[in-house]
Amino acid sequence: MAIAVTADIIGSRQLDDRVEAQWQFDAAIARADDDLPLATQRLRPTVGDEQQAVYPTLDAALASLLLIRLALPDGVEFRFGVGIGDVERIPSAASPDGIPEGPGWWAARSAIEHVQTMQRRAAPEARSWIVAHESAGDQGMQVRWANAYLLARDELIGAMSARIRRLTYGRCLARTQRELAASEGITQSAVSQALTSAGSAAIVEGFRLLDVDVSRGSA
Image (cartoon, rainbow, N blue to C red; front, side, top):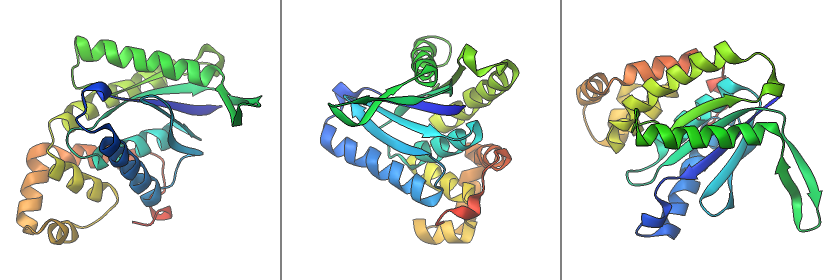
C-alpha cells in the first residue's frame, strides 16, 4: 500500500509569471525534500498545473507536504489530494517512466476535488484532504482523524505571513529561535512573539507527533 499525492497549482492561469512561479514551486519542493527526504518519488510535474508524488506512509506524506507549503513564498500555492491505495506504472513506448495508474491515484484525484469543493464553501483555507480507496481496507477512523488535523493545520497556515511560515518551517526541523532570528535579521524575542501570536507552536507540535525521523535530513 502506498500514499499517492496529486498537487494542483491554485490559480495557475492568473499567475503573472507562470515560469517564475514554477521555479518557486520547484525550489520549495527541492528544499523540503533535501531537508527531510521522505518521498519514494519526489513531487514532480506531470502535465499542465498538476504534480504527483509517492510516499511510503501517511505520516511521511503529511510531514513533507507541510514543509512544502511552509517553504512556498506568498502568491504561489498548491492544493493537495492524498490517496491511500496501490499505485503502479503501466509500460508505454511514449513514456519512458510509464503511466501512473492504480487506486491510489484515483483516490488522490477524488481528494483534490473534495478540497476544491471545501474551498468554495465551508473551508476557504482548506488546501489538503485524504481519501482511502476501498481496496486499502478499513482506514476510515485514521483518515477522519487525519483530515480533522489537516483542516485545523491549513486554517492556521492560511493566516501566516511568509516570514512566519519560514520561522515555523525552521522550528519543525528543530532549528533554535536564536538561529532563526539570525537568519531573519531580527531579535530572538521577535521570533518568539511572532510564533506565539500565529499559533505556530501547534503546527510544530503536530509535526513532531508524525512518525518521521527529522535527523535523516540535511537540516
